[in-house]
Amino acid sequence: MSYKPTYRAANTIAGTIEQHFVKLHANAVEQGEVDLATQPDKKIIEALIDVAFWSSLRKEEGHSPRISIAFLPPSQTSKPLKFAKKLALNANTLTKIAPGIERSGIHLGVWEEDGELYIWGTTLNIPNFCFVVDVSEPGLIVIKHRRIYGIGKYTNVAVLKGEQIRIVDDTSCKNRDCPPILKALLDLTVLASWNDPINILIQFSVSMRGHGRGGALLIVPKDDQNWEESIIHPITYLVEPPFCGLSNLAKQSGNQSEIFSQGALRREVEHLAGLTAVDGATIINDQFDLIAFGAKIGRAKGKPTVEQIAFSEPIVDGEDKILFPGQLGGTRHFSVAQFVNDQHQAIGLVASQDGHFTIFSWSKQQNMVMAHRIETLLL
Image 1 (cartoon, rainbow, N blue to C red):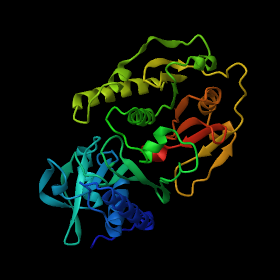
Image 2: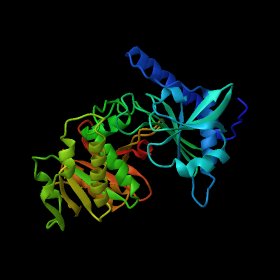
Image 3: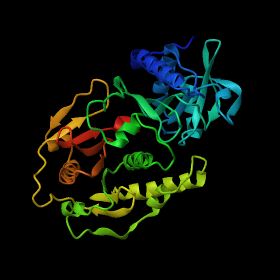
Image 4: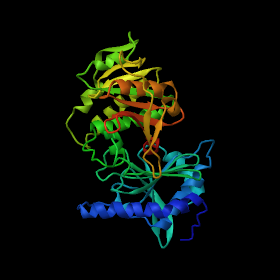
């Protein structure tokens, strides 16, 4: 291959990524899975990460590129948009073409021929375990792959920010209590349909993080009103009766082909996730009925103040820590931790303005609130 990578982090991580895909494919073949994408080797992985990184630092008409590069030939996708002439894979080409392909769901197709990588066109569909490199923002590269059943958000493998490398640890839930949303993001559970409740929560999390204003979401049991003891009354933005737009869609039976329903669900998620930008917490039940937004959290009568939190992050070499609530973030983090400390059946999601995202849940194993920082999985 004549392309000579110069981004040091790409060389450092390429072998690890190669082995990740070898393991994925071996397990899938053993289970009888088909429609698997071609495995990328170390040189291809390094070259794609390198060209993506240097492209991310450029601008076209004042805009930084946002690109999703998929490694596959046109024959492995349906209805590919093919260019009449192959394009050279380099930072200049990617920067020029980026404005036309930055919308969500569009992948730039890259393949190898005679030892050279080239751009053949674009596609909306990629096969299982297809190697994808996302240019998310200047200097930020995300390596991911399509889930085996294609449902929900792609599975992140690693995130590179300049010379910083963060590799996702898919064994991080092995010896600790983890909420279902984290297990799904680590690809440890199968999301069976477009309206799978966990898939909806993942979409909710991505949307919350996406509006960039910070926010808090509390998910409470439908038939349990004890959560009201941990909310200051009166609630300014109480919804009466609870809004059931999202919950009605979540209850629909169907499959991936129901494009209209999937679009409607995305709109409802965006609608409710937007409310988390209002000061205070948005409250929904576990059936996705909207109960209130802008709610103020207070310690329930007779409940202790949360003094310690077990912290974890699902990345390789990530350390488990016991923190004081103030070490994790500001008032929003403390108040949601207190809410979960009062209401063990509840789950809290907190998006920070700086991009951090944390799930708060009660750990029976550790008998305390656990904070899982997951922005690495949401990019």
